[in-house]
Length: 237
Image (cartoon, rainbow, N blue to C red; front, side, top):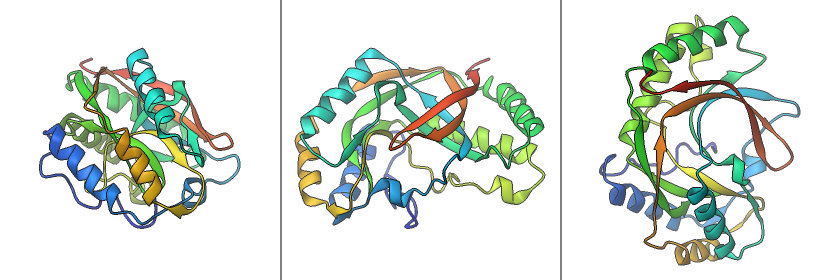
């Protein structure tokens, strides 16, 4: 995330319609004039680890789809998300040094109870688009993702006595679901990248099932994000 606020800036006309979501993502990406170096924009101090709520994906069809689209770009200056690194970020919780273990345990317990009322759902992944510093897929529909986000935000509010600790990036008004496949690693004009992404916007989509939400301990290894799972919570209890 950059200091310029959420991307796209505006919400799609519909958070249920895949075409409206894809159109909104693409129109915002196509208007970018310059791409930023993700690793400079997204500051991450050495040794830092943080708690995040993730949806993670290892579906072979999705892994292959992402790899094919990334290869098709034919671009330098991109750091690929590894095959076992595909994810959708739902919400940050806080640095591991700032969130006591007892709060983490309480958060997981609250989330397990609340997510038992959320049924598993399917997502459509694609087409390809991008942001100010990454290449990513549109995902749809947003509605179940927004529901999960609201539940997890409520859990944080319930557990943390410190309002500042609850005020992390990812409020409902800022949440823009997406699935990244590569990070831009140099500041550059955007036109050639946008053209390459446009050529990979095929009609093909991949459907994936979401039945688990994970609380992960996220770290940065070089120009890559890696994580360990702290808790995996099944939807629908």
